[in-house]
Amino acid sequence: MNSVNAGKYLKKKRTNEKIELSTMANDLGIDVLLLTRYEDGLEVISDDHGLKISKYLDFEPIKIGVAPEIPEKVPPKSLNRMIKRENPDDYKKDVKAFFDYFSHLPKRKSKKVKLALFEDQLFHPEKLSNEGPFMFFNLFMVFVIFFLFAYLIEDIAMTNFTLSLTVPFTMLWYLFERHNPRNVSGLTILKWFFFGGMASILIVLIIRYFVGYPDITFVQDLLTGLIEESAKILIVLILLYHKKIEHVMTGILIGFAVGAGFAVFETSLYGMAALLQTSNFDTMLALIFDRSQFALMGGIGHHFWTGMLAGALVAGSKTGYVSLKHLIRPAFLTCYTLVILLHALWNFLIAYPLVYYLVLIATITLFSMIWLKASNDYKEYQKKQEELNRSVEPLTEPKIESSIEVTQETPLENPSEATEEPSPIIEETPEKSST
Image 1 (cartoon, rainbow, N blue to C red):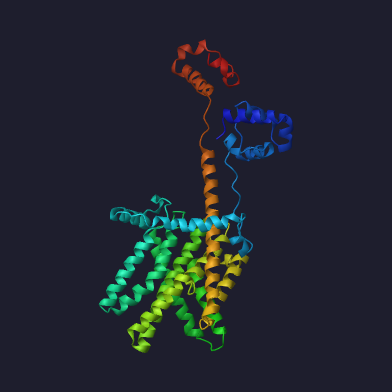
Image 2 (cartoon, rainbow, N blue to C red; image 1 turned 180 degrees about the horizontal axis):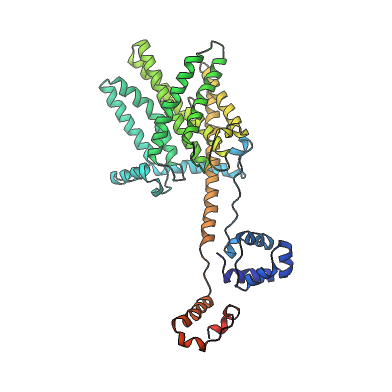
């Protein structure tokens, strides 16, 4: 990683700063002989020494071939740290970037291109470019066509499930397409969606069998929020067991998939219950339409709520591996409490439209701020990673080194000429060795 070029740069930098070599060595606790030989291109130094020297002389460590120091991931101590931006103008940029994604929709793509891109989404996400979402709208149209077909042939089961599936799954795929770390395949998303949704619904039904529905105003709504949000985050923990999740964005996506699956199966069950109680097909459709509408806007926000919780869970881990101990991190506990309250208030205030729209706005706002902060953090990570990649590229070696190598190898290939060349330390006087 270090070279003669690096030593020369250090010597020039130190000389310009008018700092004696012995003074710098004493201040940094580095052997002066080591630094002398390093500046002369005869020795290498460790990255730790390189970082110390770069800080001491105030220059980028890349200049001497040392990888930049990447700060350790620090779990946020509060929910505010998960959403706060250092520069207020970043919020405006985020809003603009959000709408810029939709500029790709009017651009037509051939069926062949769409199928190829969809195949990459399912199996090879690393091949995808960061061009913005496009497939979610196609999926939405496919679901609509299937729904209309099922409705026309009066297939109750297909109509129920397709309509329940349309909004949550389309939103999930949109978020998947905006997930810039291309480290999750579409097949994995489907697994999280179906397994997470069914497993969390099953846990809720089992708990409800024993707990029931207490007939106390607002208490039953709080209990509902507690049971359902706990069941979903438990499934997230199971899905993440022994898996390293490096980015908060990925955690949000996992939670969103589990929450969307839960929303689909819950809506489908409510629809079938309405059909059985009233024997009216239109009643079932009306209920599912209403829930789909609110799922889109964030009212019935299982996907949004679980996405926020999973993001807070991953943010609380330094290593990327999550466990039960991360459930007691301050940021997660704050988010967990807010989500349960939002869930309970939504259920409780459903008879007061003007009020529960405030819950809808709060859900969308909080989720958007957490997602946009996670997206910005990933961009910063990418920049640091690019710096690191540049730093590990070998520096261009000076021509004098290549001549030294030739001079050293020549005696081995031509033993008869070995006596003609002197044998002093070539590195100390490279100019003589090349003449």
